[in-house]
Image (cartoon, rainbow, N blue to C red):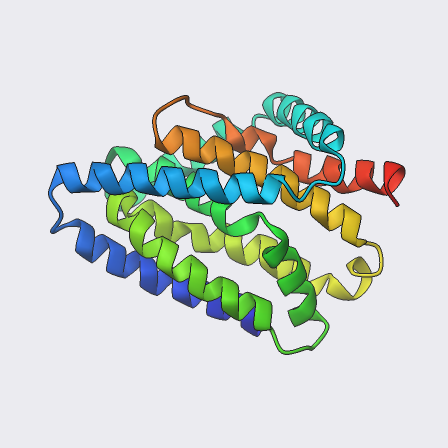
Length: 226
């Protein structure tokens, strides 16, 4: 779990630095940075989506995931949770939920999360998670400077998701073949594109409802590609 704890530490430090910087930023500059971050997230999402070996699997997975997530109420649940946290700490402003949900998805999807957690859980040197920790720490500075303290609270789902993968690595790794990881990454990329569009205020995309797609993607990949 050392890789995950280091990852949490860099996000924490980055978020704190970002919040300190953000307080001194003119509102106009914050808005421009938010737009820049939205474009960067879209670019990362596109690069991840292109890892799909069969785009039909990604499309079907994201559609099934969105339907499942909507029926379960994942987006509403996360929004309610973030609102309760915001009310209890009396901090964060109107962008608390945007920062919390956006950062959570940004830090928890992608092949580096899965492969890095497996590497750490199998007792190897957590090189991938250390690399991810640096990237996440830098992005936390930018995101927290405009979205505030909500980014800091993303370390909780980061611990739960990445930690669960790490602890389950011994029996998950033999099951998770490369094609399955690629499709999970591609679906995660589509979700990141949704986050980017939301950050740019082009369209409010309910990306949290699409989270079950990360389960459908490896299952479909195993059936049709493995």
